[in-house]
Length: 130
Length: 383
Ligand SMILES: [Zn+2]
Image (cartoon, rainbow over all chains, first blue to last red; front, side, top):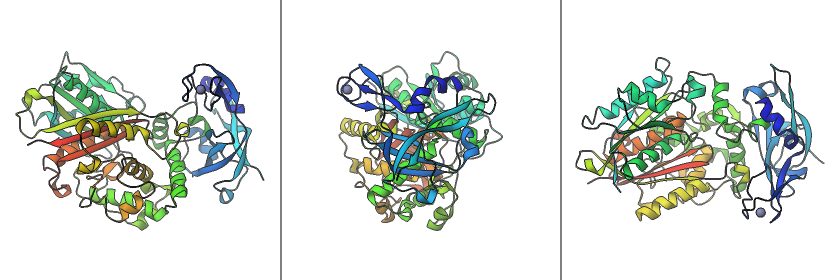
């Protein structure tokens, strides 16, 4: 994790802010420079809907160095209600309760921290909704 | 434009090579190839490598290799396309010879994975993905493949046991491959009992880390009368959208599809004309997706076809004839060069017990990350 790179994108990680094509309306997360559907360069920042469902998941036992203290971590492939797919950690859930099709909501959580500089990295994670 | 031939190859056995540096590995592979063709003097050198900076604090590999070989004045450089670096390096050598800019292009793929610890290697491999949007949420390369594997199994109702067919075939073929990392067969129980890494991916679903280097010597038609040549009749590279989540259908490898289609169109061949396939089986799931995208199995059917013997050495479409990425090994940036070298051995009847009898055409398929950059080569027996 490179602290300045994280800081640069922090608003996107906090609130799932991607962008939207002003010409054809297609929505993106992460944001794109050029619309992949119509080729327009006229895009505006756009907040993703927070609700979605799990279309796949994994229990990762050997994460990268930054996430080692939190292993195992649960990762979900989430389809948001606007059709955009994102990958994010699943939290506030027991591993045996994770299901394909499970409804989830994005929420702001601590992702990890920089053990040298003390910076805490926050971002979205997904929690189940009943 | 010139025709392009492989004149010789050099293979370093893959594994823990603690006593050899990255330049030792490159030079060993290069000399094995060059010694077979004393008439050949490289006028271009391409090195395929992914993370020598992270593994060996060493970049600038092209000129380093040229210098180690005692050469001056040669255009020599490294190309990088993550795990597809080797295939792209062969492509760059092909382009130079094809265009008439080189008569003898030495292509070497190299990776030194065992000088660093697993977390460092994991981090280096994760760099193949979009740093800002995958690493930050805790995704590693293996977990990304795990998400896709579960998605696939769920969508097509494929069982865990069926998926295991691929590592079993790979290990079976590696038993008699002199340069393979794992020269041993495995059983279904071995796969199912191997440690979980990222559910549903277990250790034996994943290609191993290893040190390795391979070389292929490409020559122009000026040398067409030399012995033991194999012709490269197609060399295609294509990209796909960087993030798997951006793709309309994450289970369809579009870069593979496009590169393969171009290669077949240019050669006038059908996929069923090819006698063997060195596929990018970095994970069990990538073997299945590759075969289905290539049209060798229907969607969702590759594991069952594998169980029925379709992809065995003596089956309809032999794959990973020396063990593939799973068992021959996957020293990432070297892999694509190993594949082309193996196709050369098959098409010159030097594959020993692994020989696909009478093979005329061979295909190699190598990609970076999950089909982000894909290189496809078709090689043809000469004479
Ligand atoms: Zn648009």
